[in-house]
Length: 293
Image (tube, rainbow, N blue to C red; front, side, top):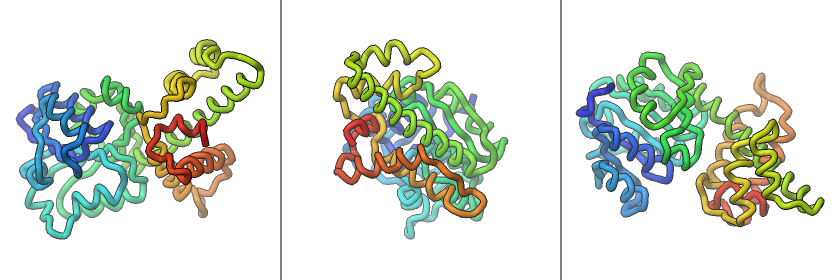
């Protein structure tokens, strides 16, 4: 177990980050949280579960050995790490390790890792799956890209926040695996929407679809967890539609042209559906709102 006196900086206290940081603090780790906006519900949640709160990001980074981030995208992460007025190397401990739990795409992860390496600092990309429930209940799956020894440096943290750790390969491969995960999420969710449409057309109760199919070969996380929300008309976000659209765009870029070019008709349907939803101004809703796209 990592020494609980080691300072951990946590950047980003949204729905996911606040709960992940709180689980670390509850396990005895010394976690200092900084969020771009404050006051914010996530900041208050983290504070109520034992996290220290930094008003300035430099206070969070100062003397930290482990820097965790869970932010919206690559530019958001860059704005923290590489601000013009910020001497990152002087702020953090020597050989500090940056663990990013965001979805920023494989190319950006590799670029950031390279820039940090030039400062004598380490980086792993460790995007997660499991949603807000997984963050709350510490049942997340981590898809880790980075050196094996760097993964071992933070394994005890990951074990507190999740239940499965997959070492996908070097930096960037964790991000690539997460994009595959997001493809499955988007396509499976569209399948749930269509299944409900068929149920309606055949005069069946949608709840029967969840009950009968959720535990069998046709079951999916999307059906079991988001199906009831669609039925109830509950569009509150566990994961925002605009964030899934961002991830699907990353995938589109990753497989466009060259040796990576592949034909993905189901993916294209999912991408188009979430694009319509966000174009209609509903991007802040949960992904289940795609049923109304």
